[in-house]
Length: 346
Image 1 (spheres, rainbow, N blue to C red):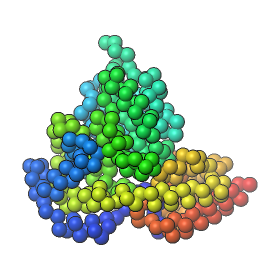
Image 2: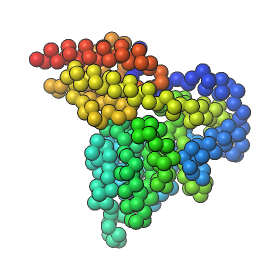
Image 3: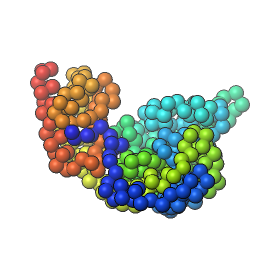
Image 4: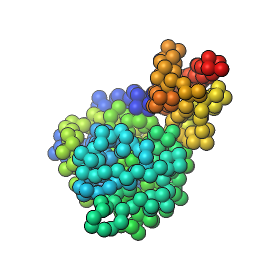
């Protein structure tokens, strides 16, 4: 099977497996796991921050950040298709007592002007804004990238408005690769940043939350409250160190492979915005109201796994475990399936 459902399906590299087997470990709840401590120091260094905390999932990292920055009864401004809104089990309400105030971005990209319009007025009878949350890259918009100049306007505007800004940077290393800038520069103005080790970077488990030393000290309380206090977690952090230090170098390969798939989809008549294919995610719609679940089931019979993300929408995600040759093979099968579908509805 050529698995293009998600970059979360990647398996640890041989180097990761060796590092995991040989990892020096301790009890991380006591702060005594040397490999976890090293990963947290290096993650903070890579992003130019004071401190970092290792968490089991990106969702946990995002929800800890929301809790850090808000109070019950506030609003969190986020994009209308964002992960914190649609894929985190309403935890901003359940854990932080906040509701979402959504902004429809262009290809998932929010600008300061759009954000500014929905900031709550500072009057006692209306819930105030507590946090702005940006997603970069934006998953459900097709891996689109928010550029540095747009982010700088948001950082400046938020500072003037007295609002913190959190980055859901699950795939922020993909964004940095696409823009040709360092991840530290691309995230410099955020109060906190979450990024995943277990997506394009290939680790089996884990994400990082970075911020100030004071914020990360409080984050440990909320991680424990969410059940994220792990013990000999160095066996996971060992893979995370390789993901952090080695795997960003090859992300450009995934982007090139995604472009190959996207161009074949366009040529075969799939509904796709080629300008929006900037990283490792390809989302397209089937013409004539085609059934996405049935289309994906048909692809599975041809040896290609994809995700139906709506009644008529399909997603591919390229990653380390799918080679260029496999992407070429998958593209051929996808193009054939689209052309057959188009002929059937003609």
